[in-house]
Length: 99
Image 1 (spheres, helix red, strand yellow):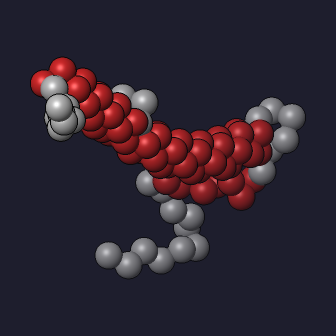
Image 2: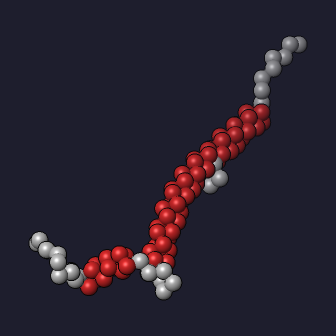
Image 3: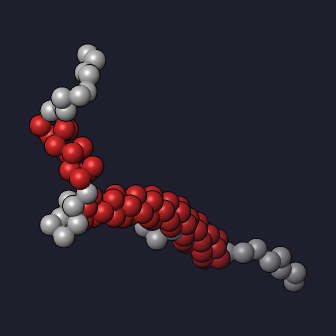
């Protein structure tokens, strides 16, 4: 009595479910909310925000410098003259305006 071994339906279902779970977890690891693509996207957003922060810090430092130069304790006459011209639209009597 020789009996040939043939896997049953249960083994096929078990390996099919194991394969599907493997595919699902692989997909989730790559494209899920905490996957590799999301991680790269977050790193790129972090770099862009760091550049914005640096740019805004430079602008704040420039504005603080201008504010200090127009304060009561330190008055820069050239800056005051420039601001008065730009805000009031005035010129000195010895200047020529070309339009």
